[in-house]
Image (tube, rainbow over all chains, first blue to last red; front, side):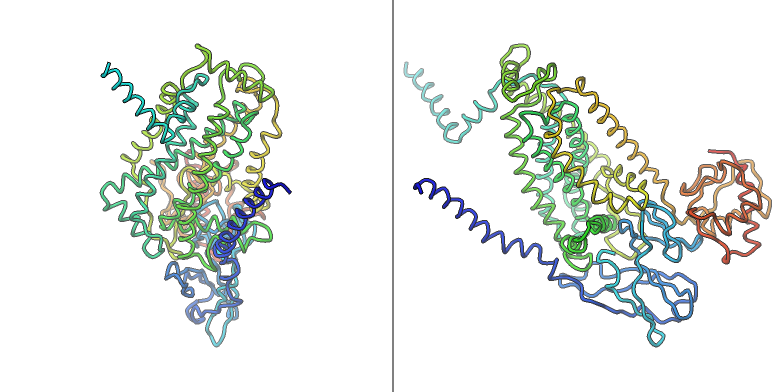
Length: 159
Length: 477
């Protein structure tokens, strides 16, 4: 091989090696949340007792999310909860299933309205209008000794 | 003699200094060159460049005060706006320049679609421009998340939801952008990093390449619009001829610089006046996931929001991913697909119609968003009664119940109120008492109205029906 082409390859090699030595650790660090900060399997939290939720009445309550290593931002999160029957509790995320805008419950029409693109859901979380394709996100719930608990990780990450 | 030598030495010294700093080459190759005559509208490119520089300067100034920790970010923006000397103006310039930059970006792209500015030899210039286009849009979005007010938090969540619709890796993308399992401190830090470092570094590098290519291949000239140009060689000869000719050419400095600089200054002046008079984007309550909120994107995205609101559920989730991807791919492929020799709006009727449709569509959708007639919302106030109309006691009670049962969350009466359902004074066909009764208790399937059967008393229903019967006779809007 000619001296010139050896040198050309050497230049490329040095460049690639430098790029890899810096690029590999920085990319890994930048992308780390994808595997390092995945939510755990389940995270159950009590939201009140059955007596706090009169049958048939929609309540907006605030749950406190687990603290993040970077401070206390947005730990308080409102959810909607109601009891259709003695044995049942339904807890919704306020996130519209279209693009995540905050749903507001209208006690008059008993509908959830999305303020962004016209999503409307009925009290059972079923879609009535707008672009959302799926019903409202429901948290997994348990009633244990009269206490209603929800699994915070049972709705999508950004809901 | 001595003084003549002195002048000569002085000139020589100056020339040496300009040479040592590379200015002489720049001056001779870039500034003192002949180019084809420039029309005023070709100043959109230099306007974008100047606006970008203004964004960098005002943005850097704000980073002297802005805190990207989620528990202080909002307060720091308030400080910049309300207390910092000239802070309101600096933020205002940054805000309005951002919006106007998006407008100019669209007009720049449209102009090149009209002229065929992506054709030989400028395919590279266009391709770099496509990346710049998406980077500027990224900037114009990530910027208003940094305010960390209510709207910012929901803006971030909207984008996260869009990425969540990406097949297979939706969750991973959300974790990557959100920075963790929940929207919070790390989300803001990442948006800050993208807005202040990642995208600007990429964007400024691409601007440098784009401008280099503009100098190398020249701007679209009048001559090439008048007759077909098929090859790079043909183009080069034609461009050179126009540039060197007395009638068709001009000096880049000062003629082109003056014309394009004037356009840039005029456009920036609009941003400056808006910053002085209206001020920066309004700050809403600090970001939270608790309160009832009506988030709205910034005005340069209104058209997109209105478009989304029209989507049927079967299309919406696909659209969020497919639209930007297809737009990107289509823009990249354009120079490869359209290789015909014709340039200029007159020779390209398809593109003229296309651009016209796009512009009208964008304005129309933007206007639609200002009305947002698709949004239902609780409203405690019953509809007003037209002047001169006296309601019976029963229908007056019905009017109050109309609001209590949330009918006015969706229905307008005589043009006043929400437009999700039909305006009750403007129905296609007036409904009878029995029909109204039946409709309210059990609306027909696929009607976006909740059934009231089982949760309304017979008396209340009769009163509401009585009011609606009268409302049907109210004057139409």
